[in-house]
Image 1 (cartoon, rainbow, N blue to C red):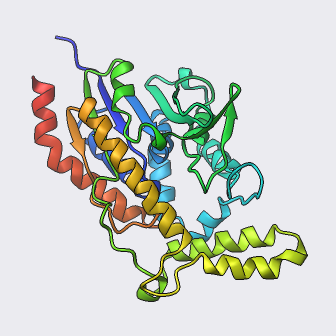
Image 2: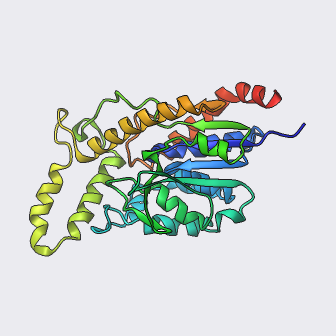
Image 3: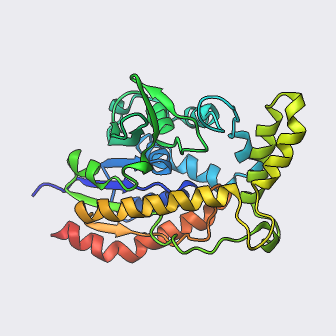
Length: 309
C-alpha cells in the first residue's frame, strides 16, 4: 500500500507564525514529514524555509533575534501603497539560502496571495520562491503590494488564511492545517501604560512611525511627528493605529477561515494558543515555537491513527 502524501497548510498570523517552526520540527522528529507545503503570509515564509532545507537555520535566527534586528528589516518607504517596502525581508530569505525556483525543490510548495484588482486567490507554485513569499506577506497597511506577472498581489490571508484547499489540489492524501487565529477574537486590548516593561511590539511601532516621519520633507516632520504620536494608545481606554489594524485583520481572517475550513476541512487541525502575541512581536519566537511543538504532541495519536488507516 502506497504511503499517503502528507500536506500541511500553514496559516497566516504575523509574529504568531513562529509557531509553524515548532509544528514542523516536531512533525519531522515524529517521522511525519509533509511532502506538500502550502502557506499564507508568515506561513509561506516559514514553509519556504522548510522546503529549502533551511528550517533549522531560521529557527536559530528567530530564537536569538532582537527587536533592533527586526527593525533593520523594516525598510520604510512612503510610496508603493505600504509603509514597508519588503526588499529587506526578501534579501534576508536569500541570505538564509531560500531563493531557488520553487520547481527545483523536491517538495511541492505554493504561497497564497490575493490579486489586488480582482480579489482572486493566486497560487504561486513556480518561479523564485522568495518572490512568492514576498507577495504572500504583503499585509495591507504594512507591506506594499508586489507586481508579479502583471498582477498587483497582496497578502493571501484576505482570501485563504489557512490554505487547505491548495494542499488538496496539489495532491495531498492527508492534510494537517495550522490555524494561528483561532483564539484571537475577544482579546482584550492592552495599552502601553499597562505593559511593564514596554513590549518589543510597542517599541517596533514607535520605531516604524519614527522612520515614516524621517522620510518626510523637513518642513513637515514636526507636524507629522505629532500626528504619529496620536496613532499610539495613550490610556487603557484608547486604541492605537496598530491595535485597530491588527484586530480588524483578525476579525476578517477569523470569519474567512471558519468559512473555508467548513467547506474544506483538514484531517487534523492544530490551533496554537497565542492570543497574547502582538502583531509585530517577532522577538518572542521561543514561546511560539514551544506552543507549536505542544500542539503536535497533543495531536500525535490522531495523526498516527490517520496514517495507520
